[in-house]
Image 1: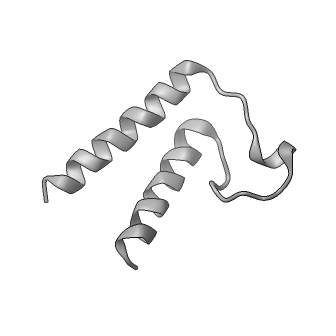
Image 2: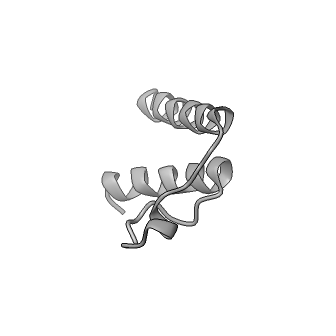
Length: 59
């Protein structure tokens, strides 16, 4: 797995955990590609991504 694959996998994990999204891939249908989320959930997902980046950068 290359770096881009690892990053995408981590982002999809965060999206599932905090935003209840099955995938970050475009599926070509508005009902599948657009979602409503509260700002708290978005903030938590962004924080998790930030923390993951810091952890990876500290290696």
